[in-house]
Image 1 (cartoon, rainbow, N blue to C red):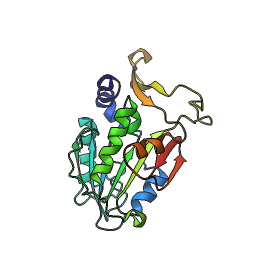
Image 2: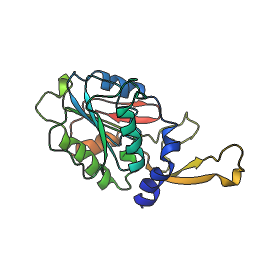
Image 3: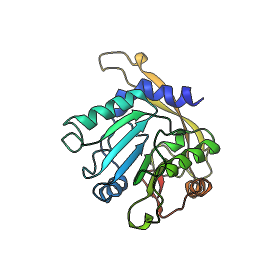
Image 4: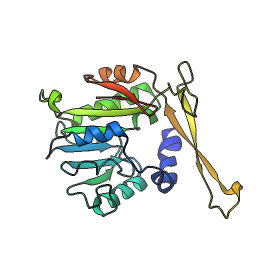
Length: 230
């Protein structure tokens, strides 16, 4: 199911999707900017790598299930077209599954996972993915001073003020269309629509999943139709 409605879709739409993803969200940006110099961070589900150039004083390693998006992220890491306008020292990206991350236990100073967990089709898989994030980050009692933290973002059910109109009490498991528009000179019938699976998180649900995965909730909030938790 996820192969058809998540993995296959992102492989097909990668260049078009990347063209719509340029700027990190404000809280993601501030979280990354506050990481201490010399830290090593993981960006799980890095997409085109847009978040990897926010803080040039840390080393970022990204991964994504989509080889096409990883290729775009690696280009960003090694070229002057990155958000930092220069190649990012030490940064790299690789193809990996969020349920089987290829990183050693407790070696990352921080992890971000932005708009990824909501693509997993069962709660068990979503909790397992969060457990993988927690496995990778160091646990040395210093979470309160910026190390050993994991930032997760998921799409919210409560989007009553957005154009989508989803809100409390609505369906949480949805197939959301992505329309690949044809060039202007071509007819509309050549447009292609893909459907991506999303589990829309209701208020408090992300915190419950973090606790179920063995984590500790330090902070949580809402930004741009998403719930986030550290």
